[in-house]
Amino acid sequence: MDSIGKQIKTRRKCLKITQRQLADLSGIGINTLTKIERDEANPSLRILEKVLDTLGLVLTTAVKNIE
Image (tube, rainbow, N blue to C red; front, side, top):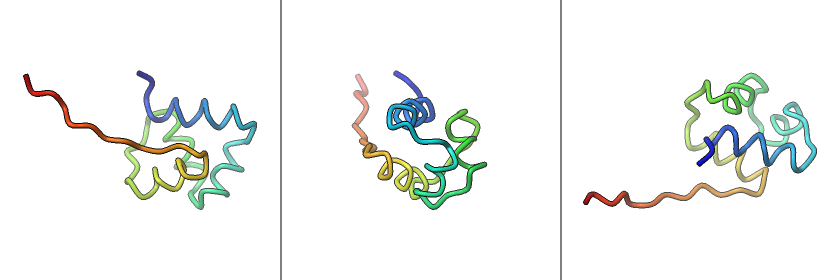
């Protein structure tokens, strides 16, 4: 499974938008977005929601099997 940063980068490139455009559309800083895509950041859920919503992606969670 790809990291969230890699998934964001792949989707952004698929949509043919630059990091600067995505940062502006999402309302976050370019440095923050760059770090997220490189898996160098630990963004809040609020920041992730902004980016994912802009890209048409959703974040899902699941309960881990304890067995």
